[in-house]
Every structure is written in C-alpha cells, then in structure tokens.
Image (cartoon, rainbow, N blue to C red; front, top):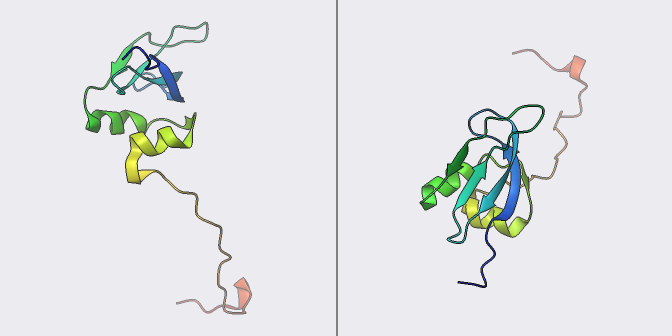
Length: 102
C-alpha cells in the first residue's frame, strides 16, 4: 500500500460542525475525512472522519467543489448530481398576461 497517496484532497466544502470552509480528503483506506483548521477568521479545529461507505456518502454530500469528477462518482455513486440542460418554458404561444387564471 506504499503507492497509495495519503491525505488526497477530494474537494472543498463547509465544516460539518461550524460551517467554516475546509478541505475534504481521502485517507489510505479511501474513507473521507475533514479537519477544520484554525485560521485568523475562525474555525473550530475539530475533525470528522468516516469508517464506512455510508459515512463516506454522508460526508461527501457536503462537498461543494470537487477536485475531480471521478472522485465525485466514486464517493457519491449514482447520486452524483447532473446539471440538466435548461429547457425553455412552454407558454402555449401566449404571453404571461394573456394566460387564464385557474
């Protein structure tokens, strides 16, 4: 297991305890963990880690900016949110003011 990168950053999101921005990482067993570092503007200096696949999903849901799509698919599985293509709303050829009120 010497070739496995330890403490690999998988993304960034809020601390589960205080909401301060923190880096989410994967340990050598590929479980998610996060440590809230103490900075000049705050932070609780606490750590949260997962030891199961369910815990990995719970922590991974908090990640707002992923480092790679592969990590997002790996930790969220099929639940990875896809950005849908914007579809224009159907108005039926009428303007907003000409529609009937139900």
